[in-house]
Length: 142
Image (cartoon, rainbow, N blue to C red; front, side, top):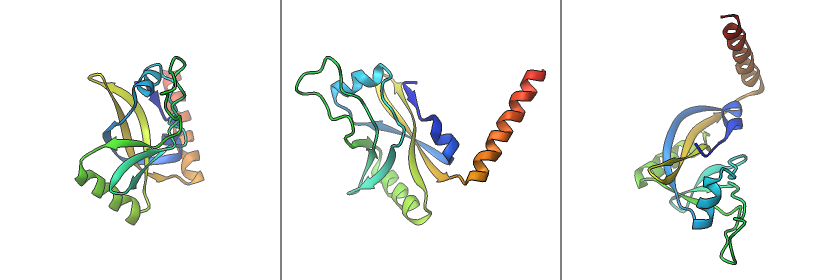
């Protein structure tokens, strides 16, 4: 795994996940392989009939030249057209959000795990923290 959006599982309830390819430049792939990419604050959006990853930060490659990439550009996610339509309907009708959960390599290609998520209320967040603390306490006793 290259990077993970830890805050996503705390702030959102993940209803389903989807594996997507991502369109990257060569310098972006090098930075991602070093583990310097950040998924914090990013989200998926259907724009013009295509699925895009908005707000993902991939810093500039240190050894890149004048052809270096823009760190905050929107990146196209590669999925089937039917899946794009399904995701568009879910996000518009049900008030769900597309959140990237992690970046990883699969057969040498960078993949994004995109989650269809619903935002958690404050009391839900507290409840999950309590459950986590109880489970940790039980593990310590064993």
